[in-house]
Length: 239
Figure (spheres, rainbow, N blue to C red):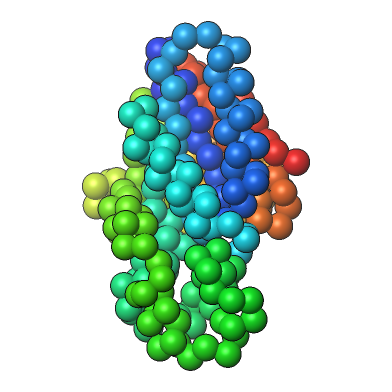
């Protein structure tokens, strides 16, 4: 039998936003319209992580997701590898700054008020000091409390993927947030159908054992949501 989330639930999983608040707002509008058109069912919204870095509006994306999670509906957000870096840097861990620089941290800090062109001349210590004083602790605590996975029916939702052959409860956070080839190249079945982001593809990457929905929104303008109800699947895209 094909995997199912149950007929009474309608899930929308959203891929990596990467600071594109404009695309997120557009996609959420499409989701609400789609949900209304399909009739009664409990909506569940799942963000697969990587809310920030690279795009211009990371702070706005984080605040939008925080508001949705606090709205009283079933809205879930997972922690991705970019959240991991952001949290560590914002809590003063200077060791992650070289990676944070390479992975779009400049755009994120500018969304929090850092003047343009300053990031490149700041030392690693300057960056963690600036973040300690300018990134709201409520944002850091919200992101730090995000889980690594969630499930609905026969589907498992993670940011990057899972280590094949390991029970979900025994998976390492480093794999759930960072894994690529060992997961992507695995062709055998998993206990659940795995829905993930993290690894960019031009369109939805639908395989027998997984569905990848990171369509590179920050550079492509294409932010993707996977819709699920019962055994049915459909996709919504911006761009």
